[in-house]
Amino acid sequence: MDVLLSFAAALVSLRLAGLLLARRRLAWAGGLATFAAAAATMAWGAAHGWDARAFRVYYLAGALLSAPLLGIGSLSLWERRWAAPLGLVYAGLAVGVAVAMPVHGAFAGSHVPHAQSHVDVLPRVVAIAASSLGTLAVVVVAVATLRRRPLGNVLLLGAVAAAAAASALTQTATAAAAGCFALAAVALYGSARLPR
Image (cartoon, rainbow, N blue to C red; front, side, top):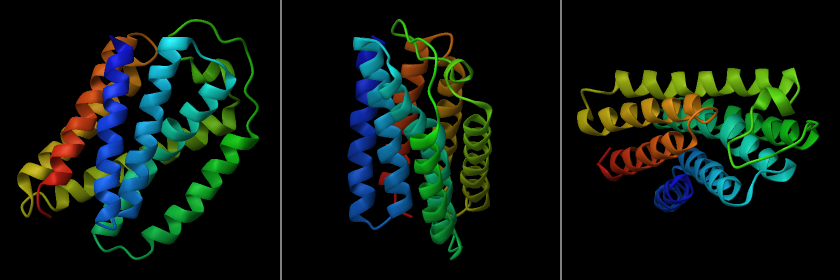
């Protein structure tokens, strides 16, 4: 079941990334594309087992890029001109961290591997800080513009809550995490389809 839910989340996220790209919401499209890559990697790991390559893709897409790019996208929509250059610099840094970080330890099973078992402290600190700041940006912009776009922003905040729950559940309940990722993707899709 977790394979199907993760795969469904990947498909919905990829579809939404395409719609956002067509609307020239580049940072949001990138955030959703990386969300799709993380969900697809979860599906792959659940179906075929994890290895260092799959974990590196999952870590780059899910831990290092998704939330920060969504935060940059929110700040850009809020007309913060400095957000796009900051997003480009951070995306380059994140790719560099993911490529350079040593991935160690043995991988076994279909459960999402614990980052602390396979990645050193610095990449984990970068991921936690960037994801926290990206999530905070999404929430602040959604709350600040709630009166202008109530239903869309409530869906967006619900998606953030579902994604946070999914991240917390990946270590203990993979099927529940996959369900939360799918719910987050559907809520993001609903939010993006509503007028701005």
